[in-house]
Amino acid sequence: MSRRLVAHRPGRTRLASAALVALGASIAPTAPVAADTLDDVRARGVVRCGVNADLAGFSTADSLGEFSGFDIDLCRAVAAAVLGDEEAFEPIVTTSVDRFDALNAGAFEVLSRNTTWTLDRNARHGEFAGTSFYDGQGFMVTRRSGTRSALELDDARICVARGTTSELNALDFFTISELRYRPVPFDDESAAFGAYARGDCDAVTSDRSALAAQRSALPEPEAHVVLPETISKEPLGPVVRSDDTTWENVVRWTLNCLINAEELGVTSGDARIASTTGSAVTTSPAARRLLGLEGDAGEALGLEASWCATVVGLIGNYGEIYARNIGPETPIGLERGVNGLWSDGGLLYAPPIR
Image (cartoon, rainbow, N blue to C red; front, side):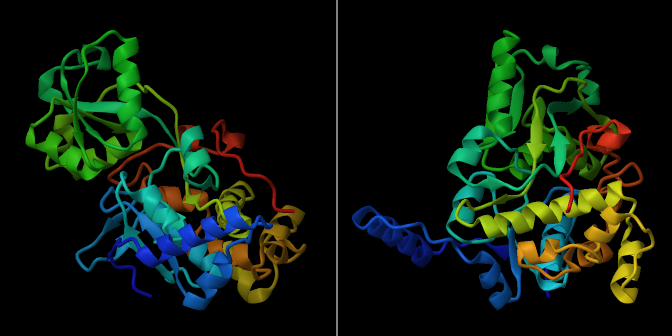
């Protein structure tokens, strides 16, 4: 299944249908009808995933239009869980401005696009299926500017993307710090970073992971510095519509599968052995449940018993995904830090599969 870029075009028919359903509900109150997203995905044979157009390490396309990255691997994991094929997903590029409207218009089933979990977004736009990456906002400047702290950015031109938490957090930071704020807003992160690279701004602000990703893609990465201050909490994770708890659970537990697999020491190789031989490399009851050799977790989700073994066998566990896309040995070079397992002093913690 091709993973090439697909432009988003909101469907008027879906929007019109939604309006008719809402009108009918106001006339004759009935119990809400759950959307059958899981059945729809199986019938279509592909998971549609809303993604970033170009964020190194998280979501980028090669010269053939094939996508890869940390957020893309979550899309692949959902496809593996539901369809048994990590390639059975369709990346649909969406911007920070239109991502929630596109999700709720039915353009895709999962939004996996460096999206921060906030109360307003959760209440208005959809359900967050967990935190896949713990981040925080920062600022990047050129080394030759001599700027060593965000507190030195008084009256500086700040490139920022509209419709993001970065836009609001920057305003809060400058207000609290009693600094003059000169935002230069753009419709998406790529445009904001492009303007910074051209010298149209004195600094650019975004999640620190995005700053590291964009810095790695600049012609001279060493000529740019991410300032030491972290001015916000940015728990990033996948989002689904609020109308289907069954699908929400599938996405949530796919993420939990990846995290639990790392904690239990189950690697992609271990999961493949379990899938082909029907036995686990460990006698741990928790590992056996994760691999579908005991219990009925798959049935509870409407999936195959071996769904998590399939996911880990094809994609790897959370640690393998992190190392492959954004870890210290990649151009992004991000240490695990707070994204380490809770047992290693990080924040990464998943409910048990049992």
